[in-house]
Every structure is written in structure tokens, then in C-alpha cells.
Image (cartoon, rainbow, N blue to C red; front, side):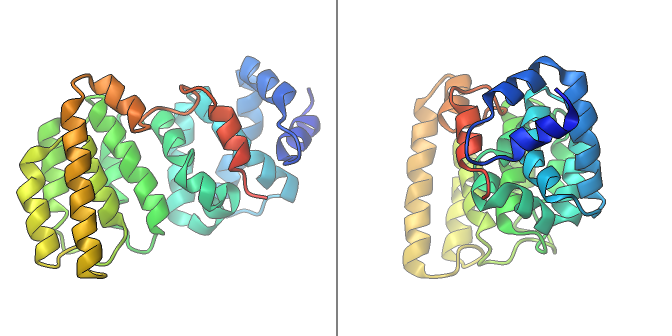
Length: 254
């Protein structure tokens, strides 16, 4: 397939481009030669043609499926330096569903840089939450130690650059603690909520959040097999679960 045909097929939102996707998966060098330069171009703030931008959405899923580790750096730059462009490419649905799992496919050993995005208040919380989920995946995989993870999660409250009390990212913080089963942090969570350090929108909402946190923590405790918990909580690299490509296509921005 030539470049134009691949871009045309992957940019079309009317029909799932099975032929083009399968071809790209079977020809990784060809796929990388098309979509890695487009990713770098987008990350540098250069304009893309409409067909290029639309095709890059599935193109990034292809790079993730092929585990193109070199794509992590420009994807990080795209998220931090061109966040509006990232949202244009993925749409809010894509940012909330498959973008975290694309990061999981590419972030092997990048726990430190994933974590550094969490307090970045200028970045939309949906993007930061995706990085937080990818960081949590790194903890599950053992590439961030439990001791280091607990330290990071606890110290987030103390940092001068900590998210503001009403920042929705705190809900993701609670989710990470619960999913990882860090019961030792439960008193810290309770104090943070009751003292108004986090989730300060309303007292009723804060109580609901804490009850949900307790329930999620209990459910995580009940699952002894960590791999089962990862699957249940969707901490899987993109393309490792049935229906991933269908989900990606359905959530593509129109």
C-alpha cells in the first residue's frame, strides 16, 4: 500500500479500516516510516494536513501495538508542549480510554517522567490522569517499587507544586492508591479529605469519593492475583485486550 492510500483509509471515520490496519501491523517498518515522522511533526507544533491528523489517531495506536519505544519521547512532548493538538488528535473520549493504554505500551522504564506530569497544573487533568494511570501500570509491572510509589503518592500532598484542592486529578490519585492496594495510605487519604486538602467541591462529594475509595481498596485486597486485577482495572497495554481496535475506532474524534 502506498502512503496516500494508508492515510486515506485510516482517516475515514465511516468504516473500520481493517485492511489498512492489518497491513500496517504486518509491515512495521512501513508503518513507522509514515507515522513516526507525523508524530514528531505534531509534537513540534508544525501543522498537519487534515488527512494526516485524522490518520495519526489510529497511527498512534499502531505505533503502540508495535511497541515502538522511540515514540514515547515525541508523544510526551506532544502531551506537555502541544496539549491542545493532542486533544484534537484523540478527542476527549480517546484521551480517557485508549490514550492511557498507548502510554502503557510505550513507557517501559519511564516511571519518573510519567510521574513528573501529574502536578503540571497547566495541563488538562484528563491528560495528567492518563499519565497517572500509565505510572500505576509501571508500579504493577514492578518497574517502580512499592516503596517509591508510596513515597510519591504520599508526598504529592506536600509539594509546593501539588495540584489544587479542587483539581479532579485527586480522584485519579485515590484510584491509583486503591488499585495498587496501598492500605497503609488510607489514614492519609482520610485526613486529606476531611481537612480539605483535596476534593473540596462539596462535603457530600468528598464523602462519596472516600466511600468509593474504601470499596475499591477492599475489592483490590480481595484479588490475590495482581495480573487479574490489572485486567479488571484496565491496566493493559493497547491491543492486549479483545475489542481494543473496535474501541479505538468507536472513540475516534469526528
